[in-house]
Each structure stands twice: as structure tokens, then as C-alpha cells.
Image 1 (cartoon, helix red, strand yellow):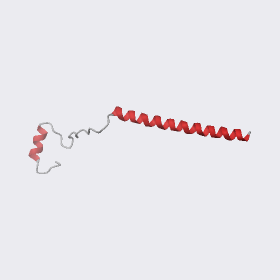
Image 2 (spheres, rainbow, N blue to C red):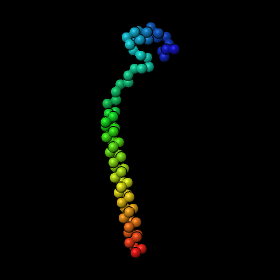
Image 3 (cartoon, rainbow, N blue to C red):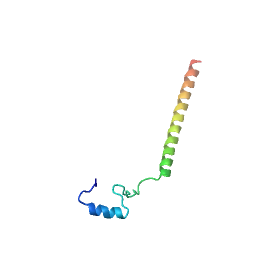
Image 4 (cartoon, rainbow, N blue to C red):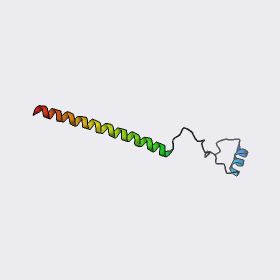
Amino acid sequence: MDPLPGRAGVLDALRAVGYRIGMAEKPSDPTRKTPKERENERDARLKKALRANLARRKAQARARKGRQDEQD
């Protein structure tokens, strides 16, 4: 069934020149990031999270060591 009933002649003409109904290419979005840009942003977020996690673990280790020194 055609998506545009009553337009069979137009649709046939479009199909004759290779136009696929429902398969038209969407216009490209100029603000859309390339896969490489997305990958770089993802890597930056992961590195930031890893640095924060490492800093937190170091702070916990220092606090643990401080508590042990107090007990001795």
C-alpha cells in the first residue's frame, strides 16, 4: 500500500527515477559529531572518571593509614 493514496502517478514517476519511498536520505545535521569526535569525548569522560576514582582511592588509603598510625 502506498503511503500517499491518490498519488500513484507521482509515486510511479518517482520510482522510475530511482526514488525509494520511505528511504529518502535525511538531511545531514551540521551539529552532529563525527564518530571520531564522539570517541574522543567518550575517552575524555572515561579518563576523567578514572582520575577521580584513583584520587578517591588514594584519599581513602591515606585516611586508613592515618587511623592505623593513631592506633599504634
